Length: 168
Image 1 (cartoon, helix red, strand yellow):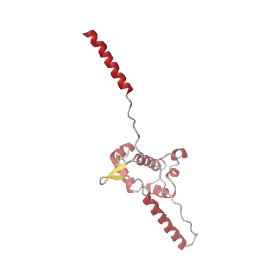
Image 2 (cartoon, one colour; image 1 turned 180 degrees about the horizontal axis):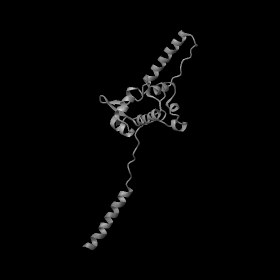
Image 3 (cartoon, helix red, strand yellow; image 1 turned 90 degrees about the horizontal axis):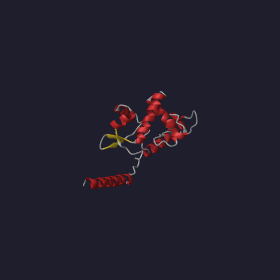
Image 4 (tube, helix red, strand yellow; image 1 turned 180 degrees about the vertical axis):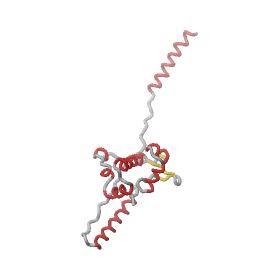
């Protein structure tokens, strides 16, 4: 009986091994980069920061995580990438948070971070809060006020259509 079962066992093992080898793997699709999936604790660990740091950036208007079920913050991969860039600007270039907020109203983030076109061209987390300013005559206070009001009106229209609010 042992002589018969050994070849049968080998055949079963061979069939099982071939079945396992020929089975197609399930295709894993990447998540959307703008899908908020990371709670603040996980996002903080991914970034190597304390959750309080992310709350500070949020209170300063530099990052706007999605709110889920009340006050729970969820960060997307784009938010994580933006905070990495933000921290690089703050720590490597020595720009303060208020200074960075002001700079971002004047130029896009890739100009502040000095990202090459090859990087910022495919970056999904880029921020562009810069708005062209309305021209006015120098020395004409009435014209300056009118231009400033027009700029504020343009800013309000842009902010309501963006995911992230402009600093202010």
